[in-house]
Length: 161
Image 1 (cartoon, rainbow, N blue to C red):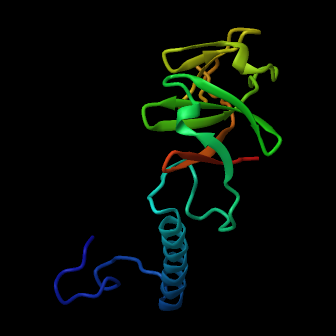
Image 2: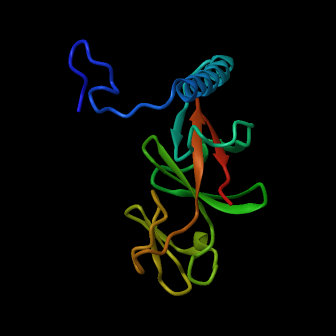
């Protein structure tokens, strides 16, 4: 229900947070936007970001993962970031980062077949979507995905543990 002209949100049946909570939310939002704007201004660009939440820890935990050109179109790049073996996959401007271990028995996936946006584990044939990590063989099973951001041509990954 939306307020009519002259009505307050509360009298129109719209629930609102107490004034002190709204003020805290605005301060947190402004601090986040200010921090993000400073980082973008320093880089001279705006990032393309997948998966990270604006509510995540504000400290800089983004780890360098090379450049966009390092990943072949519709192909993978295998690397270790922060001690974690990962696969980076690129489709156009979209880049995803997944654990490089089959959810079935942990066998490295990079030795598998990449085709049509999927990777097939060479050990037992489990197939995964490279964009999301979803297992197509056993629904409900998924590879751990990591946050990815691209600033200019540089890729950064935020590991999920």
